[in-house]
Image (cartoon, rainbow, N blue to C red; front, side):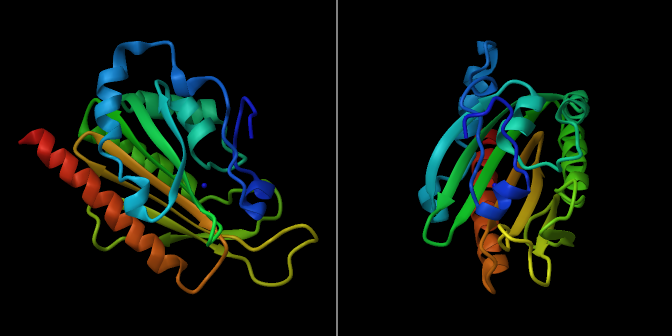
Length: 226
């Protein structure tokens, strides 16, 4: 939450619950200097089985623009290169991510972890992404309305709930619900985005997933510092 060189999630992608991921480019950057640190960072991400979903793809990014284009949902009106430059300026060093899905509940999910050169930089990037989460994801009429969402059990976090709009949708559109969240541990930023069919249990399921993602990240961070 395919095969174009600039994969992004627009209204149709969300409405049809199809994940758009680039098949080429930034996931396998030419700069191998971060390979070791990125492999370690990947170990901080919760496993698909622990989240109750299936892993579809796995990625590495050596620049923030590729992370935005290939790995995350950002508003259509946002220029990835400009936001990417702001994240780079915050001290971005590299990121890893996973595309996940649960076909039974028509749930799409993206989880990622990014390394920064300081905790302050990671928090700055969190705030940049959260600001985007609260914007309308569509340039025209949208099928969701973003709102603030609290993750009470996860420190240094920010989240948004993309609530399905009420009323009848235009022909070819389908109701969608989504949650976007970020949290920081040390100099690492973790991002979770999920979208799928609206349900009364969507929020509770997202909270469960977020606890699992946080516990995996916090545990790995504590082990690395031991």
